[in-house]
Image (cartoon, rainbow, N blue to C red; front, side, top):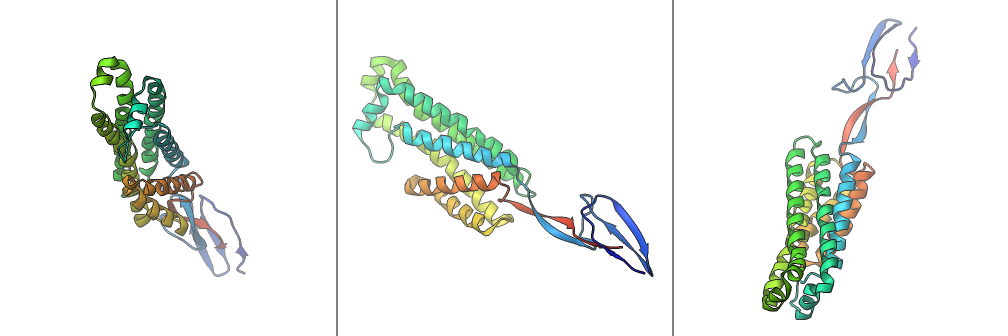
Length: 252
């Protein structure tokens, strides 16, 4: 007589005999193929720490960009005067230092991406490059305000405002647009090369394109929103997915 029994997942190798034949089932992490009674289950490849790293970077950089007052975009002599004023030096230094520390979170983001088969290593390296760019830009933009104070009246009176503008503009590009470009490329590659829900894929592509075009400013704001959504997807393990076999039923 042949009997039928539902079983849960098991890491054991079992052999049962009943009626006119025997059935052998193998399941668990050591099995490289789907066997009788197995079905595919989607699981996350990238750890939650990657999403946390992305979140910290986005918030730290965005806050610094909005609160630092570093001149950029359309030239304004009044903005330059306010930025290099001794009373603003402490605020500029603290804000950009926080941005530099937040940029290091991209290393954590990249470490999580390293687990993705095939493309993980180059994407992790690109995230490290993004962190280095952001740290350098943060110290450049913040260093202008600090240097004016430390240099005293000789520097403050002799430094051309146009030169100050060029330095802070380059600092903004390195600290904000540089990592946005790198993370944007990462997002697009993930959307093309990995398994992810449709809504995450759409967010990754839109955010990636806007990150690449971050110097246009309005695209940077869209990039920030998309990056925040992606960080939540990573932290909730809904971003990059993989298929793992799960035992559903077996015949004994």
